[in-house]
Length: 337
Image (cartoon, rainbow, N blue to C red; front, top):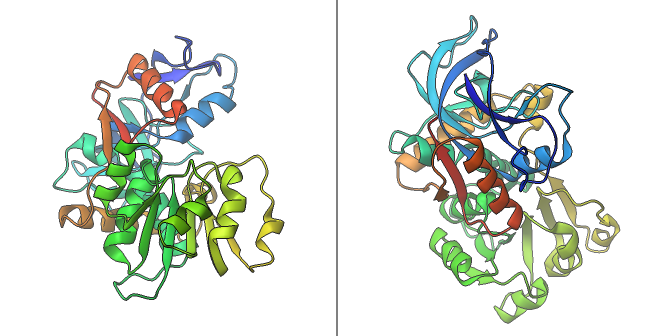
């Protein structure tokens, strides 16, 4: 089958950084679905793995952890899906990625695709939706419901993939006042459109930008990018006993800064459940089904920023380069082989 992979960890400008390759057909295990991949989207995890993981000699590593497709076969113990079902999922970091014509995935981390979306629009959602949902409701412990509990959430990097979903979830499903940070006119407009009550520019010191917007303090922070650079300002902006959640990979983080205000720190990594096969791993199945319902009800919208065409090495190199530039808006999707 056709696939896109790499043999050596190389800068994205190198034509060998991602290559068109042929791979043997994957075989579904007892709880696996064999999925015909119709569309994929690209995430920062793709670029991080490519930059930092050298494959075994002579072996290609396949990336790609956002899929929309159709179930072609099911394992002997599968109970949640049948052949022909349209599905979407983010897969497992411990298994090969999905930049291939067919892919196998554990049914417990797969959702039924929204009926109202194309494959490309659906592929933009799983990884960011799981991350945003777990961060908001499980890590930060925000209650669902529109009751105003006088809580304020600052989302740092609100225009990116996770931020685009998180802004909508916070606006549509909670009583939070939502403050989104974005630095360019087009990304600020995007965040406003997705439902942020207030927009601040993270090129300015954040606590000062908040004060200029009439906000003395926030109760919760979702820091989605450059947490180490913003940390002192985030601590300054947080009310005593507030909560800080992050998803990025700072080399170091001085958590002693959190002590004086008794702030709590929460890390969200959406692959934890599949990586450790936690007893509640099936929660990601339920979560994706709930997101699909919200999409079909018109409560949430897909976060496609750009469609980069066919799934091939050339287009994926372009997608990686845009993500690495830090200038992407929403999600980059590719469709068909």
